[in-house]
Image (cartoon, rainbow, N blue to C red; front, side):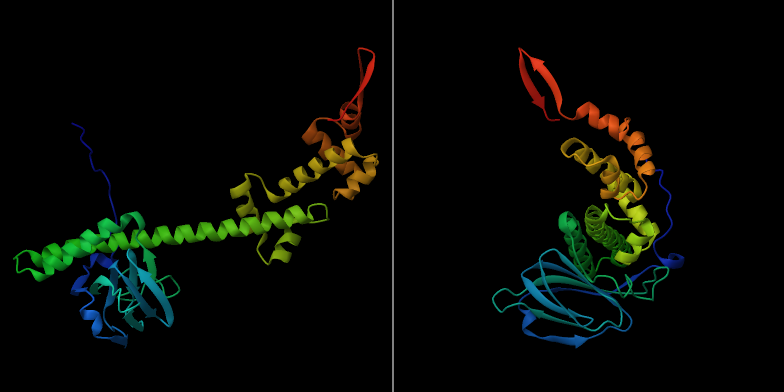
Length: 299
């Protein structure tokens, strides 16, 4: 037997330890979808809807969403929304919970996320857990069990914590996606301009980003700073030119972006361990005589 001890301490997700209240619950099936639910709001309640099957079209805050199984929809209080099936043949089945007395720190009453946040989240691998909770909350709400009210209160808090976790994970994933795209643009810009006289500030100005953000983002993805990356790109290009061309060391220095050949010499020596001239002499066109035959080796 393996015992797992719980030593976790926590601060309540709900402001001043207030308990959210389930105002109503319902299970919507195709027979109920025949009755339209046009534009409406809930002044004192937030609604959470879980798509169980079929497809639906929802207009939330002026934006239209086509939803399917596993989608979790959130209607903050006072947000205008409209619900309809995507087609007569494939009417959606969904659960809907109306919640009042919901207070999160930093948010308006009866709101789950800020107005600028997404309103539709896909449950992914957490779908079965969400479905089980929605089903249990609704079934308990239909029952006349003496302890139903308290049981629903605990279940509702567990559900809301799961919703907060889902939102946080989605926002983190979205942030990573945006940062990944920004990194690609930043790296492409540097790869196209590293032979020019560029600085961290000039890159920031051209991309309309802060120098601090660029430095932090690039180092997070590449492991080195943008300027160190530029230096390594320049020295790498210089190595190719030293081996494969007859350009002078000074010309190569200017070609790869150095305005001062002495600076080029010092950086090349620091990274490669040889001066540009010694590097060329060591690696370029070594002539070996093997069995009386001249062999030219290009490295």
